[in-house]
Length: 332
Ligand code: SAM
Ligand code: DTB
Ligand code: SF4
Image (cartoon, rainbow, N blue to C red; front, side, top):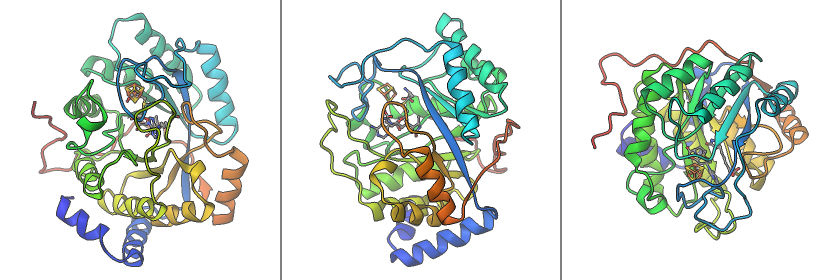
């Protein structure tokens, strides 16, 4: 969807926007399911990159220290516990710029993926930059979706990260699509961007062909020691509007109400679900930051009459739309 259309949708009176988003949501998502995804940081801290929101960058003095890649057995324990708690998707994150085929750390990650895939959960990983070969091997090992966020608009990106480019991010996304994995791609609100930046980010994501399978909308969790430690909080109704416009722009994607839920009231979360969110991170921790407690989330879903979704391990990403070029296709 182009920027002008996104802007028109966004700037409507809130109830008009919500009404439209709800109608599109109900057309495409007839059930009341919410996808429950559990995150685990399998390699924490010490990252070479300078993403100014991230507690795991080695360039900032944050409370998060550098750790080694977790052992297979320890990851399996956490994945099994997540499954027992009702989660259907296990998302493993690593604080790396990227991975390279043939290295021992990549082989270790493939081993972890094979183990987790045997649990009949959806397996998502977010390991940074990938080439075509790494993408192929991850899919073969059993990854169902790869998370790689563009985080903000192409214009605002260089203000937030200087050690890699927006086009680097798009290239990785293209490799993931070409390997036949689902793409999970979204961003963060609260990085000092304008509403226009938020909509530009959504313009880029909504033009992916094939469309992303899921779109995480994170609110910045300000991390002590990072350049964005004192950033202004995201206004709850701005988040609701953004969720609604995301639902309208990519009707078939799971829209994930992501980082920052600890800072939201139940009522704001309810509005986000009404506006089209149908996925959350579930479990007491995100990667390094806190997430609402499991019992609290289960009681919120029950209060709202929503249900946990069943897993889909089919490894069938969305089909590309015919008559449109595959995208993203980075220029540089
Ligand atoms: N290193 C890999 C990468 O950058 O793609 C994977 C891990 S990275 C931590 C994954 C995503 O977490 C980022 O793209 C960003 O969207 C999100 N994230 C990181 N720190 C955050 C924060 N403080 N608040 C909200 N979201 C955050
Ligand atoms: C995504 O969009 N959000 C998740 C996941 N993908 C990897 C990460 C949120 C991280 C929040 C800050 C932290 O835990 O350090
Ligand atoms: Fe590293 Fe990812 Fe954090 Fe950037 S967001 S510093 S690449 S872990």
